[in-house]
Every structure is written in C-alpha cells, then in structure tokens.
Image (cartoon, rainbow, N blue to C red):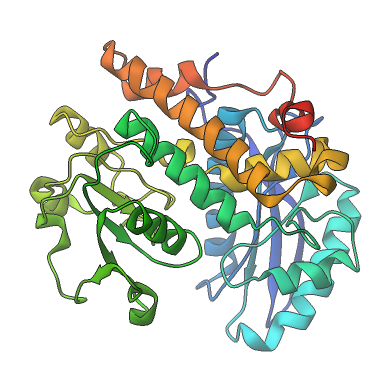
Length: 353
C-alpha cells in the first residue's frame, strides 16, 4: 500500500467565521468525501487570516498522512483560530466552533490542540456531538500519544523497555506527552536528560534537567526524543548531533525536511514523526468506530493497543529501511491506506473485557 505522499492531498476551507477579534477556519481534506475529516482545534495569535489558513492547510495535509498511515477511517483536517487575546475569546470560540461543526453535519470532528483543553472540549460537546476527545472517559489523548511514542522507542531498541539494557536519552519538551515518556524511561532505569521552556516540567525525580543554553545536541545519547516544537533541529545541530536514534513525538521536528535524511545517511535511524505520534488519532478511531468497546475499555487496554500498533508499524518501517528502501518508500509500504477497515474496529474483540 502506498502512502499518499506522491501528491499533496486536496484540502480546502470547509467553513469559516471572520470577525475583527476572532477568526475560525475549518480546513479539511476533500479527496475522500465519504470520510469525516479529523483534527484538533488550535488557537494562536496568527499575524493574519491568510497565515492562519495557510497553517490550517499544512496541518490538515499532515493529518491526512497520519490517518492514512494507520488507516483510521478519517480524512485529514484541522480547525485553526486566530485572536490577539486568546483568553478573552475562549467563550466565543467554543460557540463559533460548535456552529461551524453543526453546519458541516459530521464532515468534521475535532479535539484538543494548542491552547485548547479537555475542559474546552467538554463545553463543546454540550453544543455539538462532533467532538472526539475522550470526554467523560478515563482515557487521555496525550497519554495515548505518549504510549505510542514508547512503542516506537521499543521498535528502535528491538525489544521492550522491560527487557532492554537502559541507555541515555534526552527528552526535549516535558509536557503531557514528553513528561510521560521521560518518566517511563526513568522508571526503566534510563539516564534521562530533560529540557522544557517551562523549567519546572523538566524537574522530576530521576531526571537530569539541562540548562536552557545547553548544547544538548552534542550529548552522547542512545535516544533523542523531540517532544516540543516544530523546526527544533537546524542544520548546525544536525551536523553535530551525537544521538544514535531519533524518535520524534513532535510534528516536523527538523527545521528542513532534508535534515532527517542527512542523519539517515550517517546510519542514524530517524522515525518519521507521523509514524510515532499517531496515538491520539488511533484512539479517536476506536472511539468513533468501536464506541461500545471504547465505553467499556480500561485506559490501559487502549494504551496497550496503541503502543502495540505503533511498535509493529515502526518495526516494519525500520526493516524496510534495512532492506535498502528509501524513507519515502518504506513509509509508503507500511501505510495502511484509506480503503480498508478502520483500525478502531481491530480493537473490538481483542480488548473487550
């Protein structure tokens, strides 16, 4: 199965609201009209509506690739909102977003993203059913992403964390995803260096927080786990990087796409970020397509399912690379595509209590 990276997916603005203080754009893939678009609600102080829409198009296209990799049953989508005062528009944002989602009649479903929270999603679900954010569930989308990242780590190691020899890792970004990943590595005996813009996040028992001005890319590491911002790793960092493998939970962690290939040419495995950070969309697929199993499932069962799926697909990708396939070809080969049964249906039966 070939991933749809040969040509960009067809994405467009599906619905919009524009006012002097708040603009909201729902952007979604239109290539597969039978599939609902899926992506989170992002609120940022974009410089203009055009910049907001451009980011929405970029993110929706990235979501398409992630959904196709795991066959979630969704098309790519994203809701992008622009405001100068983020806190002041929250109430209006929820109401406007609900109205726009209702106007699309299920063609778009959303969840959390930058500057939106589970509490925001809880409020949104009182106005529209077109939300997938584990509302009222013990399952946490960020935890699902973290467990998927750990599955990718295990694919790189070739064994589980429980059996692997502990090494040295740097987790850059210790929020809801990176913090969980870092703590798990510490629990398994790893030497874990941490960095975060919010210094307190990087400080927890067993971790070694690094100063903000540290040249972390020069550390001798077994694993580098970018879990923070896009564009983190630039050309100079790439050339100096001493990590033996890169497992990114962050979207687009390299400043330029070709830098990842430069590392691969140096025999440093770099897993593609959509392969690693798909835990939340896999959980969304379970919630949407196996709702009865979702309601009955323990959180650990969902996390275990996500971890296993991402570990297996990441392992297959790495095996393809060892056989000489390019990163692009390997990623396309392991992709589930968009035509089969949604991965969420596979959870039913395997993990029902």
